[in-house]
Length: 331
Ligand SMILES: *Cc1c(COP(=O)(O)O)cnc(C)c1O
Image (cartoon, rainbow, N blue to C red):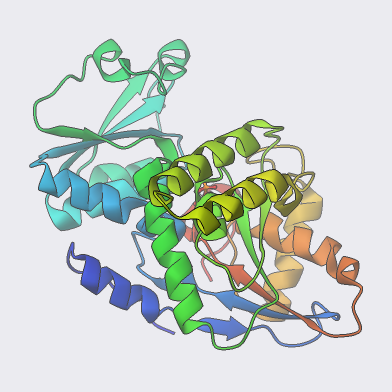
C-alpha cells in the first residue's frame, strides 16, 4: 500500500485521491463476532493525513479563492492539525502561522519541529489568551490582524471542515467494497462525526469520544448538523423530517466512556492493547484517537449480539505522526 499524494490544490484531484484510498479487511480472529474493515485514510497523504486532509480541503480552496497569502491556526504541541496545515502551506504556497499555548519550550515536540521545518511561524501565547481562541476578536487579541490572512480554527473544526468530511462520506458510499452494517469513527471536536453522520445513509455512523467531553461534543455536533440541514432544506419537506429525526436520536450514536482517563491519556492498559493489536493485525494506530476507537470496538464486540457477523467499517483518521510523542515505533 502506497500513500497517495495530494499534489495539487484541486477538488477533482482530491476526490480522485480519496476514491483511491484502500479498504483493508482485518483478518478474522481479533474481533471474533465481527467482520471489520479499515478504510486507510491515513494513507491519503503522508503529511496532510487522515481526516485533517478532508477538513482542510474546502478551507484551503476558500483561502485561495479569497486571495489569502497566510493561513493562521492554533493547536497543541502534538497537534495533527498544526502538522497538516504547516505541510499544506508549504505544498500549496501559503505562509502559515501556528498559535500554540504556553511558553516556547527549550526543546520543541517533533510535531512542532516539523511544522517549523515546513515553514510555519510558531507563536506561543499565554494560557489565558489561548482560551480566547474561539472568540471573534482572537486574532486582534494576539496581535495578528494581518492583511490577506485566513483563519482556520483548532482541529479544522468549522463548517467548511464538516463539508470536507461529507465529501469523504460520499466517497465511502461510492467506493465501499461490501455493504457495511455500521461505520465507526473517533471523535474529538465531533466535526468528523457530524460530516459522516450527515452524508452516509447506507449505514448508521457511530462516534467514539476520546475525551471527557460530556455534552459539549453533542451540542457542537447538533449545531453543525442544524446548519447543514437548514441550508439544504429549502423546500424539501422530506429532508426536514429526516433532519428532526436525526437530531433527536443523535446522542445514541455517540459513545462516551472510552477515553481512558481523558484526552491524550495513555495508560499501560491502552499501550498493551495497542501493541497486541498491531502485532496481530499489522496496522498502525495513532495513540490519541484511533487506538481508543479500536479499544471501544473490542469492548463492544459482543454487544452486537447477532448470529450474523456484523460488518463494521472503521475510518482510520490518521494521526500517525503523533506516535512519536508516546515512544511508539514507526511501523
Ligand atoms: C483530529 C483527529 C480526530 C478528531 O476529529 P474531530 O473532527 O475533531 O472529531 C480523529 N482522529 C485523528 C487521527 C485526528 O487527528
